[in-house]
Amino acid sequence: MANNIARPVNIPKSIVGINLDKTNYDTNEIVNISGSGARISATVTMKIFDMNGDKVDELNITAKSNGEYLTMWQIPADLESGEYEITVDDGASNTSTKFTIN
Image (cartoon, rainbow, N blue to C red; front, side, top):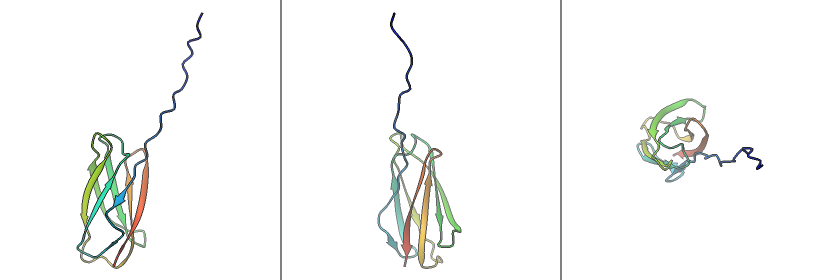
């Protein structure tokens, strides 16, 4: 008699990633934000924080069927120069990256 014991299958977990078109920007400039590894058709929440950790903006977009996402964000004219951080969360994983406003 064969031993038909189910064994767990390790499926690699997808980790959401983020890419910016560059690392230094001026106010009023457009930031191109893209990434991959998001859950299929998931809502991807992006939060933008200033150097004090205060939230500047929040964007919600839907990932494509291949887990990729793409959006643009215009830097408000009244933001101060300094380092900012964008966090990305698809409900299963998250990551962040930093950029500078001149």
